[in-house]
Length: 110
Length: 111
Image 1: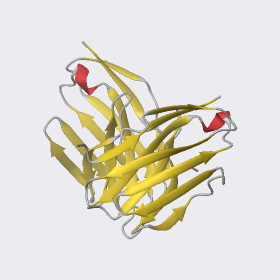
Image 2: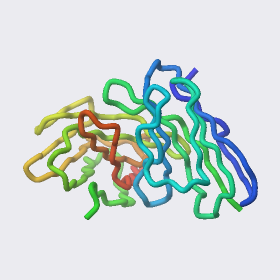
Image 3: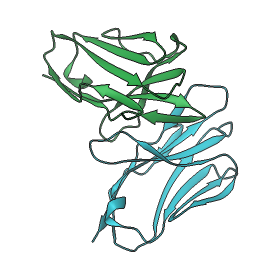
Image 4: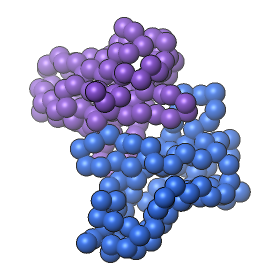
C-alpha cells in the first residue's frame, strides 16, 4: 500500500456533473494538501488541512469544495466545472518538512 | 515577479552527460529548498532537501543553494535514460504550510 493513494486516477465529466476525488494517506501525517497541476504552470496550491481544520484556501472557485473528515482522508468535491479546470489534481501529506504526493487524479472536463 | 522561476525546457542530453537544472527565487525569507522528480503519469517524489547554502550530495545528485544570489541548482552526474523526467524545485518557509513550486524542467536523457 503506497503512502498516499488517490482515486480515481482518471475522470471525465461534463460541465453539469457532480463528482468527487478521494485521497487517503497511510503515513500518520496531520496535514493534507490539494494541488492543481496544469501544463507548463507551477503547481497551484488549492487547500491545506491540518488536523481536519482548513488552514489554507487559495482563492479557489466555489465549484471546488474540499472535505477532510479525519486526518487520513481528504476529498475534493467537484460541481459545475469548466473546461479550463481540466488538469492533474495532486494530493499530498506533510511529514518532517517534506510533502509526500499521491499519483494524482487526471480530470478532463468536456 | 514570480516567487520561483524555473526554465520549463525541454532539455535533451546524451547518456552520461552532466545535467544542470536551476531555479531562482525572489524572497530571501525562504529557508528550505527541495527538488522533486516527477515521472510521466506519476506524482512528484522528493529527491533532495536542503536548508543552508552550499552543496549536498546524494549519489549522482548534488543540490546547491546560493542564498546570496537566491539561486538553487540540481546537478546530475553520469545521467541515465531512467533520469528522464520533470524536475521541480520547491521552496518552503518554516512555520508555514506553503510550498511554492517552479514550473518544472522536463529532462530527456538519450541512450
